[in-house]
Image (cartoon, rainbow, N blue to C red; front, top):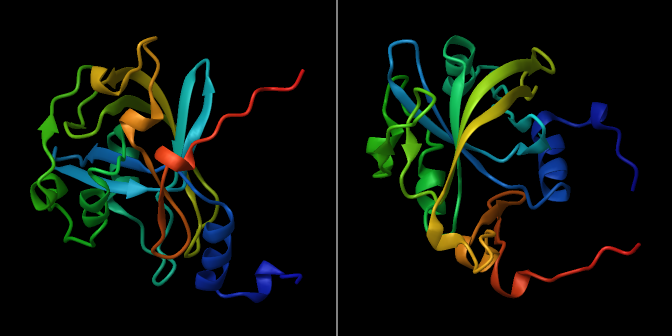
Length: 205
C-alpha cells in the first residue's frame, strides 16, 4: 500500500503515524501561565535529543478539529519554563485524566489528585508521584505550521533532574522493572515498558 498524506484527512494521518511510530514515551508537562496558574498535560510527541546540552523536545500540537492551541503551548511562550515528569503504570490513568479539556485556568493537579511539589530552579511545579522529574528552561519553540495538526516543538534544556532512589538498581542506574514506565501507541492503546516486554541486545562491533 502506498499512501500520499496530502490525500488524507488530518485524523487519518494521525491514526497511521501514531500507530506506526510507537511506542512513544510520555511527557507529563507542568507549566505556569503569566498569572502563575499551574497547568498539567501529557504529550507523547516527546523524546530526548542530546545530552550536551541535555535536551528534551515535546510538541503540544495545534488541535486538528479547530486549529486552536493548547494551554501548555501558550504558557511556555509567556513563561519559558517547564517540568517534564515521566509517566509510570501507577499514574498513567491520572496523566490521561489531565488531558481533559478543562476550562482555561483550571488546575489539573487538583482535578487529578496529583501532588504539586516546588521546583528548585524553575517556577512550574513537579509531580510528586512521578519518580523522575526534569526541571527545564525552554530554549526555543519551533512552529512547524499554522494549520490544525501542526506541531509546536518545545526545545527544553534540563536544569535539574530529580530521580527517586526507589527506581535505582544496585549500580545506581534506573531499573526498568522498578520505574515501570508506559508508552503511548495508536488510538487508545498504551504499553508497559517493563516485565516480559524487556529484552537485551548487546552492540555488535
